[in-house]
Image 1 (spheres, rainbow over the protein chains, first blue to last red):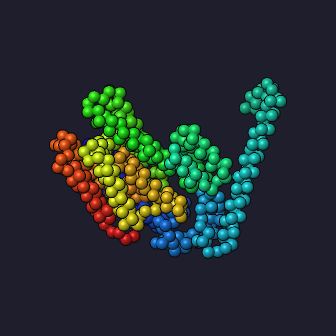
Image 2: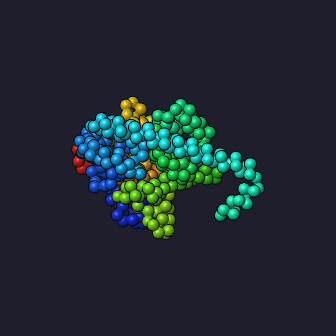
Image 3: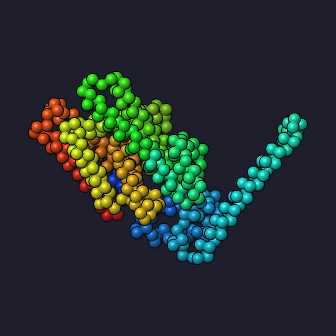
Length: 147
Length: 292
């Protein structure tokens, strides 16, 4: 067993040996991840963690960052800012009620858009299948010609 | 199956009843591991009304398998082998070996998959990336993980069975319970009892308790190095536990050899107490500062 552990430490990338000796707690790891100078998307992962792990210590910092960045995200709608992400934002952290309303509206709109797209997609697919059935063998030839 | 059903309910608690029933049906049809792997492989994104990502659910499924199947299975089989005192069939030994290797395979795959996931390495580069990018390095790490898990499970099983033989079921259970209690004490002192999953109130407390309990048992018994994460056991505590497992195994074996099954002097109780006391410093040395 000792040999296996030594082999593991010897064959792994050296810079990760410290993770086997780390005394960091879950709370500190969670808070550090937010406080590091990372991109918004990475910082946003704080809302995926249990709030007891960070709220008491860095609540104000999170609130400031969120209220500062929220208008930018809502105006630019970056790709990562999905309805799923929007649903993770705790309402009590958003100070501006109009922003909160915009989040809800945007969330609903994007969900409806998603459903509409998938419905249209399904319709197009079923329409294509019907045409294929009706067209029979001729369709195959047409297809080849188009290509 | 109970654990898996519980996970299914918790993960999908915000979904309609039909969806929850569907997930429970997957559990009851014994296809959960396959479905979880498929969901991770197809990179299905976390949905709005799901508690956590699919990879974490897969890890929970594997942890539940190890806790409820592999570990008790290994102990029961080894107990039967030891009770047979050399007259056991080869099939029994083979069955025990297969049980250990299956558990080791689950444990090593769990750690390996998490570390080599591109998404994980990108999001947490300080933690994920210990597996080398070269083929030889990958193989070495995987084999080391595999044998570490296999030997750890064998050592723990053997220690518990020897404790049970010499001191009875009370001593063996007492040892395990006190060991777990010390771990919870350590987490409580460091104010780290809550699990990272955003679940609150009574369900959150229960989930945290179960997650802490299972990760501790699996981390100790099958050396899942993924659980060195600060959100699980923690690196120092896990490594310390691995060292103590070796000491415990050696201690149990020497005591058994020395006494030859005779417990007239109560040496076994003493040795169990020593093993438990050895765990006590863990919270102290693993916690240079209690405040955060």
